[in-house]
Image (cartoon, rainbow, N blue to C red; front, side, top):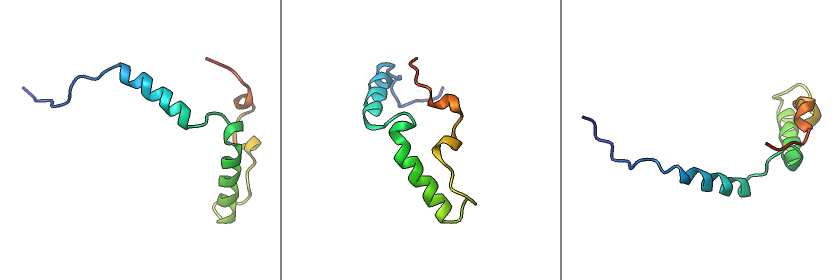
Length: 69
């Protein structure tokens, strides 16, 4: 017999956690464009890539389409 000191998982805890994460983190390419462009610039400036990628080249064209699940 094994002893598990943790209580059973509460399925409701994940739904509230997800909604709070959604409030803190920006989702989507356009909302993160500045961060992505800065990252690719730093990556290139530090010699980690031979050329600076553009955001348009980093993702498949379908990625830019807006949709809801």
